[in-house]
Image 1 (cartoon, rainbow, N blue to C red):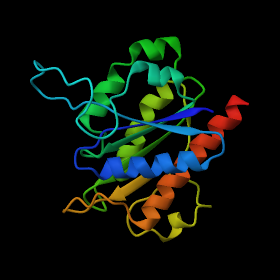
Image 2: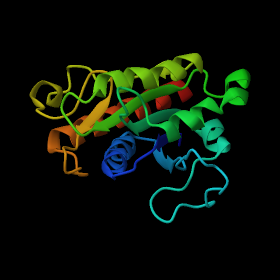
Image 3: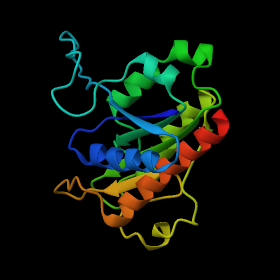
Length: 197
């Protein structure tokens, strides 16, 4: 059974909640498993190393997770229309994986969460796709055949799953946002399964 790596950074919990929905969608596809992982935070002062295991939530990603996965789904909160620094820092360190083609030919997708409706969701999703293209991934989005894409009043785009957390940082996605996140996970898992056969 192929593993789909759901790799994310979450500070307030909303991206982690969306990641769990994406992982549920992966699990709904026959013959695929979700592997939830996160990246450690970064700081301007880097004298203290991150603990090897986070205090709670998903374990930190290891390079072998990238080699072992059949597909990759990246998630990040938006930072001025871009992914958050911890995820970017991790991706920037994947030169060896890029050179060896670790991710070439694997399906990949992206998801995000913002505080406001117009907080840069689509720009963030597009910015997260660029390194995936450089790594040779097949990008997967959400087609308009997904009914929730027509009716959502919060997050959800054809570029990937998204969530509007609001000013009070509501971690739980709406029913439509959750449905779209699961659809994205299913689509990546189904493509990875087809490519593996």
